[in-house]
Length: 65
Image (cartoon, rainbow, N blue to C red):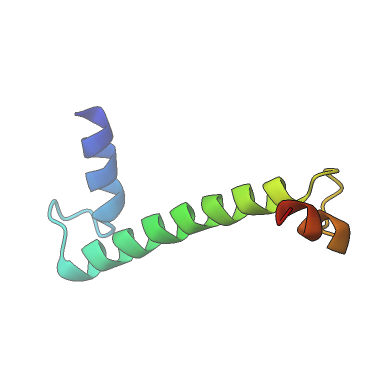
């Protein structure tokens, strides 16, 4: 219940007690962008096998073996 209230308060950007369509769309986009960023970060970390912050050709080849 608390999580739902927090989500509602975040989405209601003008604090008028209701979520307009525009607020709904913006909240959905923010959530989707965050979700995609987490997936991309996880994929990058999986490929960066030596954890040096960069992906070199040998690491890419190792993924496909």
